[in-house]
Image (cartoon, rainbow, N blue to C red; front, side, top):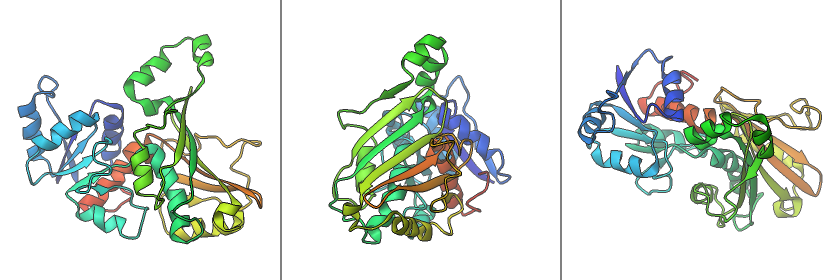
Length: 312
């Protein structure tokens, strides 16, 4: 049995990871005593007992747990504390051909942020294929359900009366361009520029869209069909990444792309829209699934060298 300790099991991501691990017959989840779960000595003992510790904590608490962990404990961190750290492997299996073996053999793996996954999986193949120059200034706008803000935001939205909730149904944030996801979006995209990023939280529970608008002139005049072909080829054998058929509008509800279409799964849809001059690349996935807990279980499976789709 592989022993797993989820430090921060009572949080939103920790609870979702626990639910997914229930499908693993060869995993034993170690549970902290509620009375001592914040005691450093008790946490250190659980961290030392685990084959892999999954950290579902704020950044400072995650750093504390890493310091408490024994040297042999492998760590999968779901915070943003180590996502661009040189000693940590970035945990996005679909990013490059080398990502999976690197994750499988790493002692320290940093689970990626929710928004960056869609951005990176849309942009990186185009840069690698030479369609998109690394120096091109990139823009990304995105929308997520309020569950992406954690327990405090969930409780805030769920406690509102109808009039109040409608009054703040859509809110942009990170407008000063200091969002915590920007470093990983820049470092792993292959771009030499930090993107202009405008995230939005909306009054629904979970599900997200990440969108990258581009001019054809920024792609050497490439058509949407050409861009689609690059993405379709890159992800043809991926179990969780699905590139919608070119020109197929069946995924739309009228003219609208619903962000909840992949909720409660670890799957991500990629779409290419636009005309000969302007393109919009879209990724749709669950911010709590592929964006957080699902991605963590996918990485854990790789670290334990068991079937990658187990529990997903």
